[in-house]
Structure formats: structure tokens, C-alpha cells
Length: 263
Image (cartoon, rainbow, N blue to C red; front, top):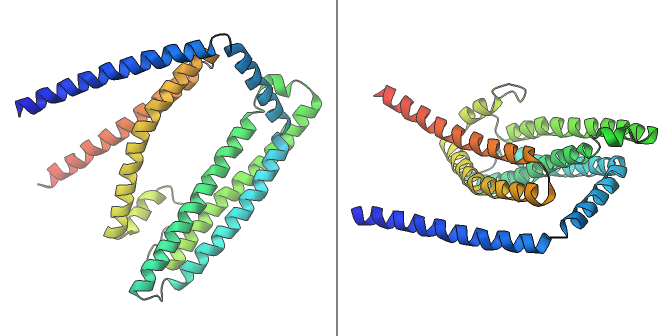
């Protein structure tokens, strides 16, 4: 046992040395690559950002149309599976539940992508320099805000429709989508098999975030070093890392405490 523990310390130490060496080489390489080109790249980024600001309204309008088309298409697919679920036999039920899960996952992903792109595109105009540049810029941004609100409202309403469609195939899930504790109530309405899928998927999401967030932290630090992107991005990513870790450990402690109290 002691040998295994010692080997673990040695392995971690070697991993740290390898990581430091790779980081030093990569850092030196990036510095040599970007030295003298940083200003050019920054200038190109500023030009691209300026072009994006001029297309905020058309981009948001196109995104609204695509969001509605995708939302209605996936709703039709979900409804087709949900209507048949209550009367289906075991074999067909498994197939229909897979179809429901597949289209539900795709539709939720598209819905979140729509909201994220909406925010990113609109945020391009959140600049006092841009809004103060001309009356046309302010007017265009005002219309863009209207389109943004319409698209976000559609995405929010679509999520309620999604819940209703799932409930159509699972009448036992009597949960109000507007309930502030909707996620908790929905989990309680699931059977053991459904909960296992949720728990395993949630743990995979936690593991993915545990790898992604540190990588993003390194990217934001390098961005601040070479492109002067500022410390805010670094702080925000660090806070997200802390929030994910603290939420997980707090939940583990609370669940162990509940188990101890039951004995």
C-alpha cells in the first residue's frame, strides 16, 4: 500500500514537471509566434468586431427566423413520439422514448445555442463608443433590442411547450413549468431508471466542466498576456471553476450528512 502511495506521489510530481516543461515550451513558442504580430491581430479583431456591430440587426433577424423554424420542426417531431407513447407496448415504448430523448436533446441544444448567440450578437453593440457614434447606430441597436426580446421570448415559451409535450407522453409528470422549484419537482416525478440517467449524465457534465474550465482559464490568461483582453474574463472563469467545485463538494457533504442522520 505504501509503495502504491509513493508511486502516486512520484507520478504526480512527474506529471507536474512534464506540464511545466510543455507550458514553458508552448509559452515561448507562442510568444515568438505572436511577437510583433500582436498589434496586427488586435487590429484585425477590432475590424471584425466593427463589421459585426454593423450587422447586429440583420444577424439577430436571421437568428430569429432560424430559431422559429428549428423550434417548430422539433416540436412536431416530439409531438409525433409523445402522442403514441401512452398506448405503446414495451418494445415500441423503448423506441419512442429514444426518439423523444433524441429530438428533445437536439431541440434543447438548438434552443440554448439560439439564446447564447442572441446574447453574443447583441453584446457587440453594448458599447458607449458605438452607441454614441451616430443616430443611425442608436436607431439600429434599438430595433435590434426589439428583435432580441422577441427571439428570447420565443425561446422561453418554446421551453414551456417542450415540457408540455413531454408530459403528453408521460401523464404522470404533473409539474408546473412556471414553478420556481421546477427542476426539483421534475426529478421527484421521475422513476428510478430516469433518475439514474439524470445522475450519470450530470456527473459526466461535471467531469467535462472540470476539464473545460481550467483550459478556458489558461486561454483567458494567455489572451490577457498577448492581447490585453483584461482581467475580468480571467476572474469570471475562475469564479465559475470555484462555483462548480464548491457546489459539487457541498452536495456530497449534505448527502452524507442526510445519510448519517437516518442511522
